[in-house]
Length: 240
View 1 (cartoon, rainbow, N blue to C red):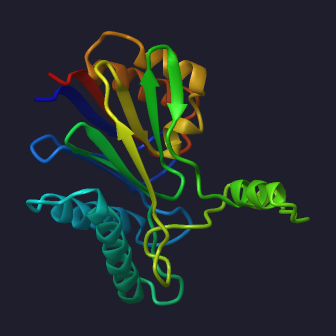
View 2: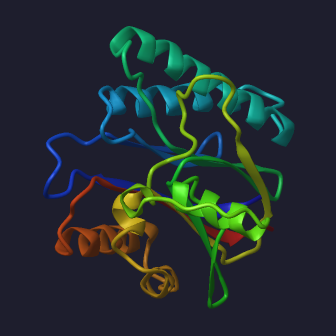
């Protein structure tokens, strides 16, 4: 049986009037994740809330395995799109999603947008997800030999989000668990202000997950807190 500890915290930050991040920590069903309502669109909080609700309900059904996660995320995106047609017919609503579900001794991660999942294994911090941003898409296209450019102001704009028209493309990552792994799911209110070396130092501590997570968020807020800052920290103690 897997022994683990986990914590989930969010902070509105110093600038935003509303917290449009949402978090999920369902220890009984082994589900962990974050969603971030897309800035600049109305209904971000509603989008993030619905995303996590639909995914959590889908994954909590008995017999769910890795092959089901993609379909569950696609369903959640379609429901957000339908809600957006009611709340904001002109622009729609959207959210990111970065979520993990422990299945056996594997963490299956579903990812859309620019929230992130990091793994600290030993002394090495590994980003398990890639932001779906204009900048990263251009980098990938240039690697294929395409001569393409982007405006600097658009570098962080999302190329995928939950609630977009059509069927959303979902990144699935299957990560075998090891004892002493630390997994951090976080929104860009953390990843944009706390660099990877700092995150590695925080996650390497033997303090309780809530203590570590509280200090990570506090650092993001001290650096201006321009966005909501949300994280879910999962520590694998034993696989025995």
